[in-house]
Amino acid sequence: MSNATVTQDGARSSSTADVHTSPRARRRPGSALVPVEDRPVTGPVPQPMALLDPATPREDPSDAAAHEPGEAHGTLPHEPAAPGTPAPTVPPFKGIASWQAKPEMRRRELVCRVEELKGDIPVDVLRMLRRNLADVDRLLVGSGSYSGRGPERAQGPREWFTGARIETVWQTLHEVERVLVMYRSRRDLEGSLKGVLAEAEQFLPKDHRLVVQGIGWLRTPPKDLDEFRAGVRDLLGKSHEASDAFHEAARRLRNGMLGITVLTVTSIALLLVVQSRVPSVELVPAPEGFTGAPWVLLSFVMLAGALGAFVTAVPTTIRARSGGLPYRLPIQQRMLKLAVGPLLAVVGVMLVAGGLVATTQTGGMSQLLALAVVFGSAQQAITTFADKSAGDIMATKDPT
Image: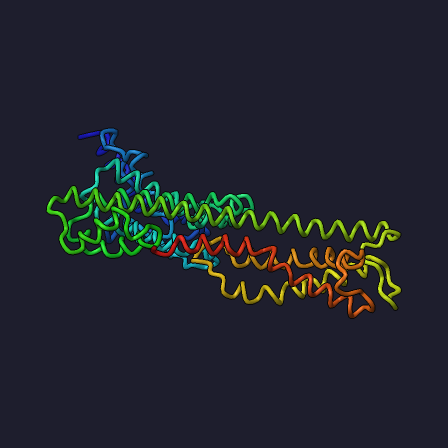
């Protein structure tokens, strides 16, 4: 008999002796003292937990870490919970940003695919895939948001500006998808090839070698399964590379427009501050009948310029396409136009007042504001480069 058996028998006899003692008070965890009357034992005596045998194998912590993705959103299968333990709930897309929704759906799809193919995937590769998907979950929602270890972590200004989180998320998802291709069956590949080609044609030209090869495989797939898998993986690789370059170009354009907008708004604020501090130097000569401070007149001119910019920006921004990007290019285009309009209005009125533009003269207040609206609407000629750049980037996503 082992030591564990002796200890268990000893505990059993001790427990039996306690039951046959005189009336006493037993304390249950989390409750007050409860009197227990002396009565014979009518059922089995509860047994204490047996001591762990040193020879019992313990679970490797690295193996447990490989299943950590199951904690996030409850997407991977768990062991059945103990009786009385509340079942974990899968959190909905509450508070999730638009840039998180699409990669989150792709992550869940890949999690299900990993579980379907886990019998054919080597253990080390399976751990790597699960770890990558867990990293994606932490990047999307925030570390510990589901397990209760911390609140959801929103995307900070630095991550928003550099695109670190969203681009890392997509690159990781792309890597997992390419790895899984090498373990998919022929039937599965043939069924999904059309969708892979449709996604690839968004970023690759139709005459690309891999696209042409994939179209041919729709009719006659290769007999060699390894060749089939490698071809689909290469097609995904080129498509993912073009997709990453597309997102990077859109982010750079967004940051460029944002930088110009910030500089323009800063220049407008400096003009107002200088005009208020040095009223003797009038940037905009006061028209007839105006008796207010020079900086007040300058503010009216800027507001009129912003009105002209808004009127001419409406058609362009309505036609602008976002392409499902998280960078919101149409919003940045609109902000740039509204920022350039007031500055152009001030410059135009100064040119007219200085006699450099002799087409009209600033007479009353209404004429001055009308000129400001006209020059503010001229922002369309200045911001055309941003509209063209955004259109060119969106054109690269269309199949050509």
